[in-house]
Amino acid sequence: MTKAANPKYLSMNGKIVPYAEAKIHSLTPCVKYGAAVFEGIRGYWNEQRGDMYLFRLKEHLDRLQFSMKVMRFDHHLEGAVMERALIDLIKANELREDIHIRLLVWVDGEEDMTATGPIGWSLAALRRPPQRAVTEGVHVAVSSWRRIDDNAMPARVKATANYNNGRLAGLQAKADGYDNTIILTHEGRVAESPGSCFFMIRDGVPVTPAVTNDILESVTRATVLRISSEYLGREPLERDISRTELYAAQETFYCGSGYEIQPILSIDRQPVGTGKPGEITRALQQKYFALVRGDTSDHADWRTPVYLANA
Image: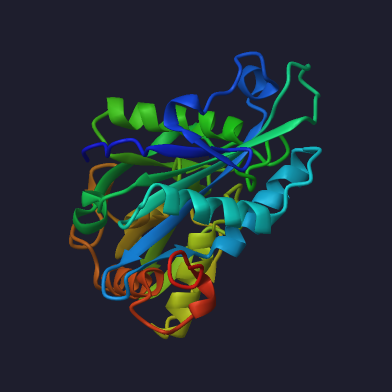
């Protein structure tokens, strides 16, 4: 995927600044100790309606508040303030295409490892063209690295430091010739990928690891669960998944705000089902994109309009 050009502006502490001026000092606890949390949010352009929709923005901002609580950030950031800053930033950059938003909150200043403030925050809205992995699928392997345990690091929190776990697993997968990887818990159960949640289809039933399997409590995962039951008439299961059960699945896929819904074609060089994107995965994709783009009136409360409703 070709990297899109950088936007003209970013937002720092609620103020729009030129891209080159969005900086953090090297001595902050954020840089020294990874004391930061973030959200990845998607915005989808609807050409027919002439508007952009931010998908499940409230849920993302609520999760950010939870992340800051768990990491004990001393702050007074409100979701409404961040929402307003985000909409202002998108308008300032005149973005009228699909975007990926990075909302980062960090411990600023020059204090030690246990500092809880002061807090800084930034917003970036980056162009995100369609991904080949969504249409064509990916080939993955089960990683030899294990997922961080919730008693060691808060796996359900989007803390930047957590992602070193996924980075190591992803680097191994790339070195071994795979597109991505599946990480297991210390008990040998399926957790997730380095940056997304995992689903499989067994006997027509969507199955995903429970939130007790050291996974991120994903907004997209929750959306897929709702789509499956409400629109496909397939009641999903949240339960443990063993490694060899992966080879018995008829379909498998990743899901996440950045990943969207990506079909997995093979695991450990063994084909999943026919080795092509499955029928249920495609049906989930179709409904998912209709919802995020506003091509349906269903779940309008999941979409925050940028231009028309906030003119």
